[in-house]
Amino acid sequence: MEEQPLQAAQEGAPRDVVPGKVGCELFGYVGIEAVLDQMRIKTMKTGFEFNIMVVGQSGLGKSTMVNTLFKSKVSCKATTPRHEERIPKTVQLQSVTHVIEEKGVKMKLTVTDTPGFGDQINNENCWDPIIKYINEQYERYLREEILISRKQKIPDTRVHSCVYFVPPTGHWLRPLDLEFMRRLSKIVNVVPVIAKADTLTLEERAEFKQRIQRDLKAHGISIYPQEDFEEDPDERILNDKIRDKIPFAVVGADQEHQVNGKRILGRKTKWGIIEVENPSHCEFPMLRDLLIRSHLQDLKDITHNMHYESYRVRRLNESNRLALSPVNGLQEKDEMESNL
Ligand SMILES: Nc1nc2c(ncn2[C@@H]2O[C@H](COP(=O)(O)OP(=O)(O)OP(=O)(O)O)[C@@H](O)[C@H]2O)c(=O)[nH]1
Ligand SMILES: [Mg+2]
Figure 1 (cartoon, rainbow, N blue to C red):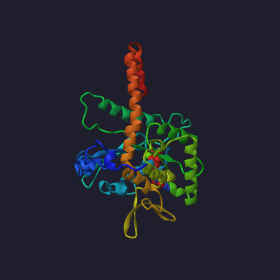
Figure 2: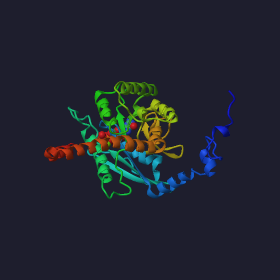
Figure 3: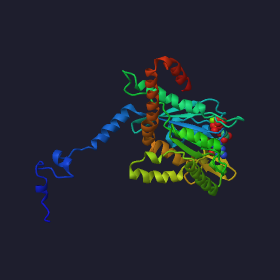
Figure 4: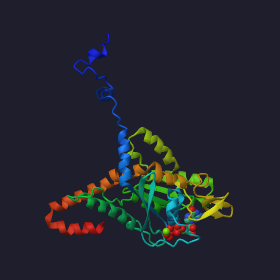
Protein backbone atom coordinates (compact mmCIF):
# COMPACT_ATOMS: atom_id res chain seq x y z
CA MET A 1 0.00 0.00 0.00
CA GLU A 2 1.21 3.46 -0.84
CA GLU A 3 2.27 5.53 2.16
CA GLN A 4 0.29 8.68 2.81
CA PRO A 5 2.29 11.87 2.98
CA LEU A 6 2.70 13.08 6.59
CA GLN A 7 0.76 16.28 5.93
CA ALA A 8 -2.32 14.34 4.83
CA ALA A 9 -2.09 11.88 7.73
CA GLN A 10 -2.17 14.80 10.18
CA GLU A 11 -5.32 16.25 8.72
CA GLY A 12 -6.97 18.60 11.13
CA ALA A 13 -3.77 19.29 13.05
CA PRO A 14 -2.40 22.85 13.13
CA ARG A 15 -0.23 23.49 10.08
CA ASP A 16 3.01 24.15 11.95
CA VAL A 17 2.82 21.14 14.28
CA VAL A 18 5.21 18.30 13.45
CA PRO A 19 4.79 15.14 15.55
CA GLY A 20 7.68 14.76 18.02
CA LYS A 21 8.62 18.44 17.82
CA VAL A 22 5.40 19.89 19.15
CA GLY A 23 6.89 22.17 21.86
CA CYS A 24 9.66 23.61 19.69
CA GLU A 25 7.47 24.41 16.72
CA LEU A 26 4.64 25.88 18.73
CA PHE A 27 6.67 28.13 21.02
CA GLY A 28 10.02 28.46 19.29
CA TYR A 29 12.96 28.16 21.72
CA VAL A 30 11.54 27.67 25.20
CA GLY A 31 14.72 27.72 27.32
CA ILE A 32 13.56 25.20 29.88
CA GLU A 33 17.09 24.94 31.26
CA ALA A 34 16.59 28.39 32.80
CA VAL A 35 14.57 26.51 35.43
CA LEU A 36 17.86 25.06 36.67
CA ASP A 37 19.14 28.57 37.36
CA GLN A 38 15.95 29.41 39.20
CA MET A 39 16.26 26.26 41.32
CA ARG A 40 19.90 27.06 42.04
CA ILE A 41 19.11 30.61 43.13
CA LYS A 42 16.30 29.35 45.34
CA THR A 43 18.56 26.76 46.98
CA MET A 44 21.25 29.40 47.46
CA LYS A 45 18.78 31.59 49.29
CA THR A 46 17.16 28.95 51.48
CA GLY A 47 20.06 26.49 51.84
CA PHE A 48 19.35 22.90 52.76
CA GLU A 49 19.69 20.49 55.61
CA PHE A 50 21.24 17.06 55.59
CA ASN A 51 21.33 14.69 58.53
CA ILE A 52 23.48 11.62 59.03
CA MET A 53 23.42 9.22 61.97
CA VAL A 54 26.12 6.75 63.01
CA VAL A 55 25.10 3.48 64.69
CA GLY A 56 26.94 0.35 65.80
CA GLN A 57 28.51 -1.66 68.57
CA SER A 58 30.72 0.09 71.17
CA GLY A 59 34.23 1.08 70.29
CA LEU A 60 33.97 0.63 66.49
CA GLY A 61 35.05 4.18 65.76
CA LYS A 62 31.69 5.96 65.32
CA SER A 63 32.69 9.14 67.16
CA THR A 64 36.04 9.13 65.38
CA MET A 65 34.19 8.88 62.05
CA VAL A 66 32.04 11.90 62.91
CA ASN A 67 35.25 13.90 63.40
CA THR A 68 36.78 12.38 60.26
CA LEU A 69 33.80 13.52 58.22
CA PHE A 70 34.04 17.07 59.49
CA LYS A 71 37.83 17.26 59.35
CA SER A 72 38.07 15.76 55.88
CA LYS A 73 37.46 17.93 52.85
CA VAL A 74 33.82 18.35 53.74
CA SER A 75 34.55 21.32 55.91
CA CYS A 76 38.20 21.73 56.71
CA LYS A 77 37.58 25.42 57.33
CA ALA A 78 34.98 24.72 59.97
CA THR A 79 37.21 22.70 62.28
CA THR A 80 39.57 23.74 65.01
CA PRO A 81 42.70 21.64 65.51
CA ARG A 82 42.64 19.39 68.55
CA HIS A 83 45.78 17.49 69.41
CA GLU A 84 45.98 13.94 70.71
CA GLU A 85 42.63 14.18 72.45
CA ARG A 86 41.08 10.88 73.45
CA ILE A 87 37.46 10.55 72.39
CA PRO A 88 35.35 9.59 75.39
CA LYS A 89 32.85 6.76 75.20
CA THR A 90 29.56 8.08 73.87
CA VAL A 91 26.84 7.76 76.51
CA GLN A 92 23.94 9.58 74.91
CA LEU A 93 22.72 10.61 71.50
CA GLN A 94 24.40 13.84 70.48
CA SER A 95 24.34 15.88 67.31
CA VAL A 96 27.07 18.03 65.83
CA THR A 97 26.11 20.60 63.20
CA HIS A 98 28.29 22.57 60.84
CA VAL A 99 27.06 25.03 58.25
CA ILE A 100 29.11 24.53 55.12
CA GLU A 101 29.06 27.14 52.41
CA GLU A 102 30.35 26.52 48.91
CA LYS A 103 29.87 28.80 45.91
CA GLY A 104 27.13 30.64 47.73
CA VAL A 105 25.11 27.51 48.60
CA LYS A 106 24.66 26.75 52.29
CA MET A 107 24.37 23.20 53.64
CA LYS A 108 23.56 22.56 57.28
CA LEU A 109 25.19 19.20 57.89
CA THR A 110 24.27 17.45 61.13
CA VAL A 111 25.81 14.19 62.26
CA THR A 112 24.16 12.40 65.17
CA ASP A 113 26.47 10.22 67.20
CA THR A 114 24.89 7.40 69.20
CA PRO A 115 26.10 5.33 72.17
CA GLY A 116 27.49 1.97 71.13
CA PHE A 117 25.63 -1.18 72.08
CA GLY A 118 26.77 -4.70 72.85
CA ASP A 119 28.20 -4.04 76.33
CA GLN A 120 25.25 -5.59 78.13
CA ILE A 121 24.83 -9.32 78.70
CA ASN A 122 21.36 -8.99 77.27
CA ASN A 123 21.36 -6.86 74.12
CA GLU A 124 17.68 -7.38 73.42
CA ASN A 125 15.96 -4.20 72.28
CA CYS A 126 19.24 -2.28 72.07
CA TRP A 127 17.80 -0.72 68.89
CA ASP A 128 14.89 0.88 70.78
CA PRO A 129 16.48 4.30 71.56
CA ILE A 130 17.76 4.67 67.98
CA ILE A 131 14.45 3.72 66.39
CA LYS A 132 12.63 5.98 68.82
CA TYR A 133 14.86 8.92 67.84
CA ILE A 134 14.32 8.35 64.10
CA ASN A 135 10.54 8.15 64.54
CA GLU A 136 10.52 11.22 66.78
CA GLN A 137 12.06 13.26 63.98
CA TYR A 138 9.32 12.06 61.56
CA GLU A 139 6.74 12.96 64.17
CA ARG A 140 8.18 16.45 64.60
CA TYR A 141 8.04 17.03 60.87
CA LEU A 142 4.50 15.67 60.62
CA ARG A 143 3.26 17.91 63.43
CA GLU A 144 4.61 20.96 61.63
CA GLU A 145 3.30 19.81 58.27
CA ILE A 146 -0.30 19.28 59.38
CA LEU A 147 -0.66 22.71 61.01
CA ILE A 148 -3.19 24.91 59.21
CA SER A 149 -0.76 27.81 59.12
CA ARG A 150 2.47 25.96 58.60
CA LYS A 151 5.97 27.26 58.11
CA GLN A 152 7.04 27.77 54.54
CA LYS A 153 10.15 25.75 55.23
CA ILE A 154 9.70 23.11 57.89
CA PRO A 155 12.89 22.50 59.90
CA ASP A 156 14.13 19.09 58.83
CA THR A 157 15.75 16.96 61.52
CA ARG A 158 14.80 13.67 59.85
CA VAL A 159 17.66 11.19 59.50
CA HIS A 160 18.50 11.03 55.79
CA SER A 161 21.15 8.41 56.12
CA CYS A 162 22.12 5.95 58.85
CA VAL A 163 25.69 4.65 58.67
CA TYR A 164 25.79 1.22 60.32
CA PHE A 165 29.19 0.05 61.62
CA VAL A 166 29.88 -3.66 61.16
CA PRO A 167 32.68 -5.05 63.38
CA PRO A 168 35.73 -6.18 61.32
CA THR A 169 35.46 -9.85 62.32
CA GLY A 170 36.13 -11.05 58.77
CA HIS A 171 33.59 -13.87 59.24
CA TRP A 172 29.91 -13.13 58.79
CA LEU A 173 27.23 -10.79 60.06
CA ARG A 174 26.21 -11.48 63.65
CA PRO A 175 22.50 -12.07 64.34
CA LEU A 176 22.45 -8.85 66.39
CA ASP A 177 23.73 -6.77 63.43
CA LEU A 178 21.31 -8.50 61.06
CA GLU A 179 18.34 -7.82 63.30
CA PHE A 180 19.39 -4.22 63.94
CA MET A 181 19.82 -3.48 60.23
CA ARG A 182 16.58 -5.29 59.37
CA ARG A 183 14.65 -3.01 61.71
CA LEU A 184 16.48 0.14 60.62
CA SER A 185 16.12 -0.55 56.90
CA LYS A 186 12.33 -0.39 57.25
CA ILE A 187 12.40 3.21 58.43
CA VAL A 188 15.61 4.82 57.19
CA ASN A 189 18.32 4.65 54.47
CA VAL A 190 20.94 2.28 55.89
CA VAL A 191 24.51 2.49 54.60
CA PRO A 192 26.60 -0.28 56.21
CA VAL A 193 30.38 0.10 56.54
CA ILE A 194 33.13 -2.29 57.66
CA ALA A 195 34.61 -0.47 60.66
CA LYS A 196 38.35 -0.26 61.40
CA ALA A 197 39.18 -1.76 58.03
CA ASP A 198 42.89 -1.25 58.74
CA THR A 199 42.70 -4.34 60.96
CA LEU A 200 41.95 -6.52 57.88
CA THR A 201 44.15 -7.30 54.89
CA LEU A 202 42.90 -6.27 51.44
CA GLU A 203 41.91 -9.89 50.67
CA GLU A 204 40.07 -10.19 54.00
CA ARG A 205 38.20 -6.95 53.29
CA ALA A 206 37.08 -8.16 49.86
CA GLU A 207 35.93 -11.55 51.16
CA PHE A 208 34.15 -10.06 54.15
CA LYS A 209 32.42 -7.54 51.92
CA GLN A 210 31.05 -10.28 49.67
CA ARG A 211 29.90 -12.33 52.63
CA ILE A 212 28.05 -9.34 54.10
CA GLN A 213 26.38 -8.66 50.74
CA ARG A 214 25.27 -12.31 50.57
CA ASP A 215 24.01 -12.32 54.19
CA LEU A 216 21.99 -9.14 53.67
CA LYS A 217 20.44 -10.52 50.49
CA ALA A 218 19.67 -13.89 52.10
CA HIS A 219 17.86 -12.13 54.96
CA GLY A 220 15.97 -9.77 52.66
CA ILE A 221 17.50 -6.64 54.18
CA SER A 222 17.23 -3.74 51.77
CA ILE A 223 20.07 -1.31 52.31
CA TYR A 224 20.70 1.94 50.43
CA PRO A 225 20.57 2.33 47.40
CA GLN A 226 17.41 0.19 47.40
CA GLU A 227 16.69 -1.64 44.12
CA ASP A 228 12.92 -1.44 44.73
CA PHE A 229 12.92 2.35 44.50
CA GLU A 230 14.71 2.62 41.15
CA GLU A 231 12.77 3.38 38.02
CA ASP A 232 15.38 4.95 35.81
CA PRO A 233 17.63 2.43 33.95
CA ASP A 234 20.65 4.80 34.04
CA GLU A 235 20.26 5.20 37.77
CA ARG A 236 20.12 1.42 38.14
CA ILE A 237 23.39 0.96 36.25
CA LEU A 238 25.13 3.54 38.44
CA ASN A 239 23.67 2.12 41.65
CA ASP A 240 24.58 -1.46 40.69
CA LYS A 241 28.21 -0.33 40.74
CA ILE A 242 27.73 1.21 44.17
CA ARG A 243 25.93 -1.87 45.51
CA ASP A 244 28.97 -3.87 44.48
CA LYS A 245 31.17 -1.73 46.73
CA ILE A 246 28.91 -1.51 49.78
CA PRO A 247 29.73 -2.00 52.65
CA PHE A 248 32.64 0.40 52.28
CA ALA A 249 35.72 -0.64 54.23
CA VAL A 250 36.46 2.53 56.19
CA VAL A 251 39.18 3.82 58.48
CA GLY A 252 38.59 6.80 60.72
CA ALA A 253 41.07 9.24 62.19
CA ASP A 254 40.96 12.67 63.70
CA GLN A 255 44.70 13.32 63.90
CA GLU A 256 46.72 14.98 61.19
CA HIS A 257 50.26 13.89 60.26
CA GLN A 258 53.00 15.37 58.13
CA VAL A 259 53.45 13.32 54.93
CA ASN A 260 55.74 14.65 52.18
CA GLY A 261 55.32 18.15 53.51
CA LYS A 262 51.53 17.94 53.55
CA ARG A 263 49.12 17.67 56.51
CA ILE A 264 47.27 14.37 56.11
CA LEU A 265 44.41 12.94 58.13
CA GLY A 266 45.44 9.43 59.08
CA ARG A 267 46.29 6.69 61.57
CA LYS A 268 49.89 6.05 62.51
CA THR A 269 50.83 2.36 62.58
CA LYS A 270 54.06 0.34 62.73
CA TRP A 271 53.90 0.05 58.95
CA GLY A 272 53.36 3.69 58.20
CA ILE A 273 50.46 6.10 58.04
CA ILE A 274 47.07 4.97 56.82
CA GLU A 275 45.66 7.97 55.01
CA VAL A 276 41.90 8.06 55.43
CA GLU A 277 41.36 10.27 52.39
CA ASN A 278 43.52 8.18 50.10
CA PRO A 279 41.29 5.84 48.03
CA SER A 280 44.09 3.27 47.78
CA HIS A 281 44.26 3.04 51.59
CA CYS A 282 40.57 2.77 52.47
CA GLU A 283 37.06 3.49 51.22
CA PHE A 284 36.26 6.44 53.45
CA PRO A 285 36.37 8.79 50.41
CA MET A 286 33.69 6.65 48.71
CA LEU A 287 31.46 6.86 51.77
CA ARG A 288 31.88 10.63 52.02
CA ASP A 289 31.23 11.15 48.32
CA LEU A 290 28.13 8.97 48.34
CA LEU A 291 26.66 10.72 51.36
CA ILE A 292 27.40 14.35 50.75
CA ARG A 293 28.10 14.59 47.06
CA SER A 294 26.74 12.10 44.53
CA HIS A 295 23.65 10.80 46.40
CA LEU A 296 22.75 13.57 48.82
CA GLN A 297 19.57 14.64 47.03
CA ASP A 298 18.53 11.03 46.40
CA LEU A 299 18.95 10.21 50.11
CA LYS A 300 16.77 13.20 50.96
CA ASP A 301 14.16 12.29 48.34
CA ILE A 302 13.90 8.66 49.49
CA THR A 303 13.64 9.80 53.10
CA HIS A 304 10.79 12.14 52.22
CA ASN A 305 8.95 10.11 49.57
CA MET A 306 9.34 6.63 50.99
CA HIS A 307 10.28 6.45 54.67
CA TYR A 308 8.54 9.58 55.91
CA GLU A 309 5.56 8.86 53.67
CA SER A 310 5.10 5.40 55.25
CA TYR A 311 5.32 6.95 58.69
CA ARG A 312 2.83 9.68 57.76
CA VAL A 313 0.29 7.25 56.29
CA ARG A 314 0.54 4.93 59.28
CA ARG A 315 0.26 7.78 61.74
CA LEU A 316 -2.69 9.51 60.04
CA ASN A 317 -4.51 6.19 59.70
CA GLU A 318 -4.05 5.65 63.42
CA SER A 319 -5.40 9.15 64.14
CA ASN A 320 -8.43 8.57 61.93
CA ARG A 321 -9.15 5.30 63.65
CA LEU A 322 -8.95 7.04 67.02
CA ALA A 323 -11.24 9.84 65.89
CA LEU A 324 -13.84 7.25 64.88
CA SER A 325 -13.73 5.42 68.21
CA PRO A 326 -14.48 8.06 70.86
CA VAL A 327 -14.77 5.56 73.73
CA ASN A 328 -11.32 4.05 73.38
CA GLY A 329 -9.84 7.13 71.79
CA LEU A 330 -8.15 8.81 74.74
CA GLN A 331 -6.65 5.67 76.19
CA GLU A 332 -5.37 4.48 72.82
CA LYS A 333 -3.93 7.91 72.07
CA ASP A 334 -1.93 7.85 75.31
CA GLU A 335 -0.62 4.38 74.49
CA MET A 336 0.28 5.42 70.98
CA GLU A 337 2.20 8.48 72.14
CA SER A 338 4.07 6.55 74.79
CA ASN A 339 5.07 4.00 72.11
CA LEU A 340 6.66 6.65 69.95
N1 LIG B 1 42.44 0.72 64.17
C1 LIG B 1 41.47 1.62 64.16
N2 LIG B 1 41.09 2.19 65.31
C2 LIG B 1 40.11 3.12 65.27
C3 LIG B 1 39.46 3.49 64.07
N3 LIG B 1 38.54 4.43 64.35
C4 LIG B 1 38.60 4.65 65.67
N4 LIG B 1 39.55 3.85 66.24
C5 LIG B 1 39.92 3.82 67.66
O1 LIG B 1 38.92 3.04 68.34
C6 LIG B 1 38.71 3.54 69.66
C7 LIG B 1 37.21 3.83 69.85
O2 LIG B 1 36.82 4.88 68.99
P1 LIG B 1 35.47 5.71 69.17
O3 LIG B 1 35.39 6.61 68.01
O4 LIG B 1 35.37 6.30 70.53
O5 LIG B 1 34.42 4.53 69.03
P2 LIG B 1 32.83 4.61 69.25
O6 LIG B 1 32.23 3.65 68.29
O7 LIG B 1 32.37 6.01 69.20
O8 LIG B 1 32.70 4.05 70.74
P3 LIG B 1 31.40 4.19 71.72
O9 LIG B 1 31.11 5.65 71.86
O10 LIG B 1 31.86 3.57 73.01
O11 LIG B 1 30.31 3.42 71.09
C8 LIG B 1 39.57 4.78 69.77
O12 LIG B 1 40.77 4.41 70.44
C9 LIG B 1 39.88 5.16 68.33
O13 LIG B 1 41.11 5.83 68.17
C10 LIG B 1 39.89 2.85 62.85
O14 LIG B 1 39.39 3.09 61.74
N5 LIG B 1 40.90 1.93 62.97
MG1 LIG C 1 31.33 7.14 70.49
